[in-house]
Length: 242
Image (cartoon, rainbow, N blue to C red):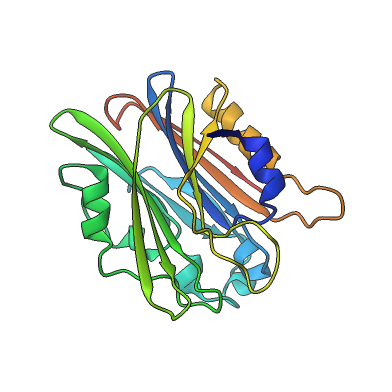
């Protein structure tokens, strides 16, 4: 069942971090979104590093950001290679030097096999997405690493069909803005996306999580990245709160 993005945001006041993968207009699309509650998590923005072909974190206030755990706050969000890209919410992206395999799913399952959920009080999931071109064919996948009630690590991988105008959504949290914060443990949601430019879609996603009445503004950033049949023919747009 496909959902409208607005319906998802109504049910998910606090998604934490989220990834959306999809295909539209013959292009492959990646979206990485960040919402946050703590001041240290909010004290940053995301920037494109042209030399390193990656999206990384830049502090907006180093003193405030350093009050948090920098190993969880400062990381590469998107890493682009000639044959694909990887996107994620933590250091698991930093540790990838190349992407290879028969498919995006097989690559993520092998590359993340020794990873675990984040070592914070909410056992925040590590979520990761990938596009991979192998033997001339593009595949995509999402992967989450969560905790079971006993603290055991659970790995879940999802192949993503590359269908026109459907994005697949995976977040760290289930949506309620409560503490302790429940993890998102469902399969990726199917999201209908209307045609538009990369900039329009990034703004639309950013504005979708505008605070409702009496809610706190939790938005930090939305990163959008699209490419054609090779990642050198690409475009990106980043909307930061600050």
